Image (cartoon, rainbow, N blue to C red; front, side):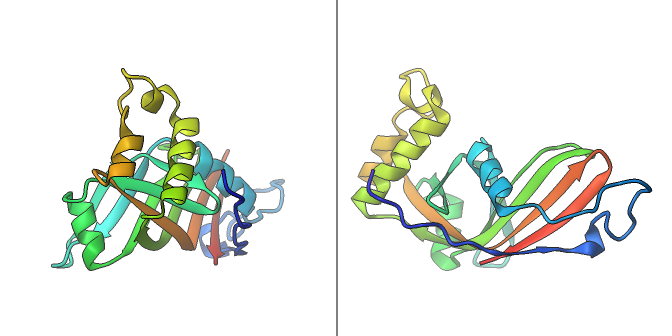
Length: 185
């Protein structure tokens, strides 16, 4: 793969209004913001994301997608005539969300940014490699759920979008300790 430029590092801030720092438990360790490195690990590992876009009439559209975090950018795809592609052609702002459905553990992540279509063949090959590494047989095996996605990226049967985070949020839960972290890029 071609050399990647270093990912931008965000300003990290704990929002005490929504963290255990506002109402700490006796004997609990100090509540601190989640490190961006931990958020990136979670973005790399998450298998399903929910992408939220806005229809031209202002109504929201939310749907699950697979996505790959690569070089400081979150990549996802859709068919060129699907609702999310039509929405993004009208308004490139979107949100990708991932996390756990647990009240007491995990880290939920929200990434806000603009979805930019990817047409550069070199970048597309990097994205295909990132998808194949992440999703393995789901993409590489003929029996895989997403087999052929690489060819769909190459031929334009699927549009690949790149979302560089503008702002991201992390909502952490660890045994009753809650954190709300904001990362500004």
